[in-house]
Length: 93
Image 1 (cartoon, rainbow, N blue to C red):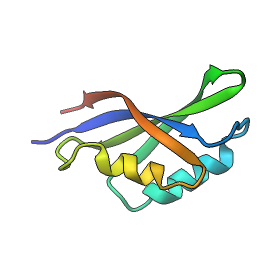
Image 2 (image 1 turned 180 degrees about the horizontal axis):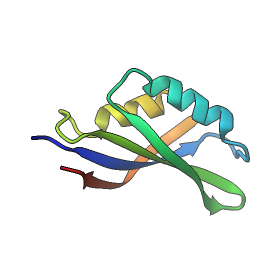
Image 3 (image 1 turned 120 degrees about the horizontal axis):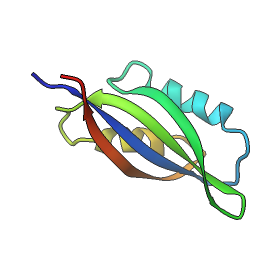
Image 4 (image 1 turned 120 degrees about the vertical axis):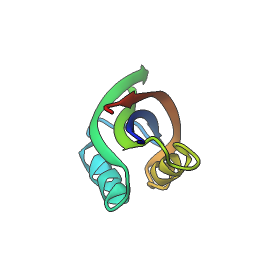
């Protein structure tokens, strides 16, 4: 029986941001109605005041293409320049 995985994506905004509230709202709207669920998020200091965003998603582990579709959804948000997978782990049984 397939379980779920937690995927941590690091999203790199196109510009320096201090307040990620509106960006998170856009991301939540993009994943609404999909198999992806945003559990939590946290800003990550990169350099010189520039921050990326670590996004923690829960998704089914048996999705064809793995995280590819999720990455494309997040890259589809106007303010996001790039996305990379930081970590994936299986949860529950």
